[in-house]
Amino acid sequence: MKIVGVDCATVDAKVGLALGTLSEGRLVIHDATLCTPERTAASVIADWLSNREDAALIAIDAPLGWPKPLAESLVRHNAGEAIATPANMMFRRATDLFIQRELKKTPLDVGADRIARTAHAALHLLGNLRAMLEMPIPLAWTPADLSAIAAIEVYPAATLVGHRIRSTGYKRREQVEQRREIIDGLRQKLTIRDYVPDLSQSADLVDAVVCVLAGDDFVHRRAMSPENRTLAEREGWIWASRREA
Image 1 (spheres, rainbow, N blue to C red):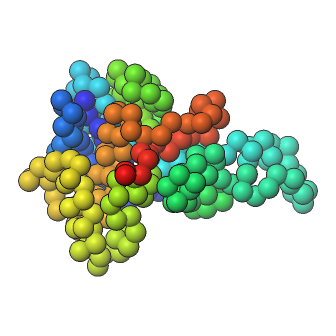
Image 2: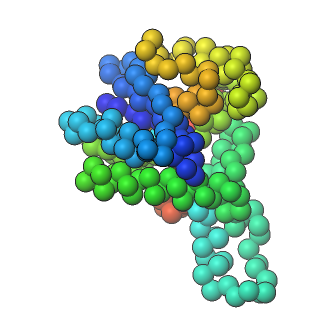
């Protein structure tokens, strides 16, 4: 099967993508690319997944839902009125609290931060892919859901922590050596083909490959499942593995 990693952003020029394949338990990275306004994320992914015979998983680094208490608190709210719901309940999802508790990484608050725009862009991307591929692309909740094309939400920092690989201090352009350290750690988990572009030149490419690894964790049931499936289906769920021993 194919696993596509998406380091999502509000504009295509900042989106990083990676393509992996999983065969007989071996995870291989075949391509990684930065998108452009002309070469959009949807068009690249649609091209990668054009072979309908292959099952595929799209692992997206962006929230795919909003906190349930946020929607419930605002639906009848009028300007100037007090809101009884505590801020943490409104702006953080159950999965955000779970990841912070289990892996000591705190995702950005989708209800109160600029990440909300990235979440909106991710949902728009999924909508475009559904139209281009003429397929539903549902969210997957177990590996059994992967008979065609499905998507999951992932968080590269949590995946790196789970695999005990550096998870901070690599985003700035000049932090090439730090990205190479992460790439060395990733090579212990997967194979990167020689013809894949130099990942160390872009944190977006590194994160896209980490998204592929997160997808592999999901497929092999290493990722932690929702404590409340019904709530997760409403808010979204970050799939990440537990910290390795």
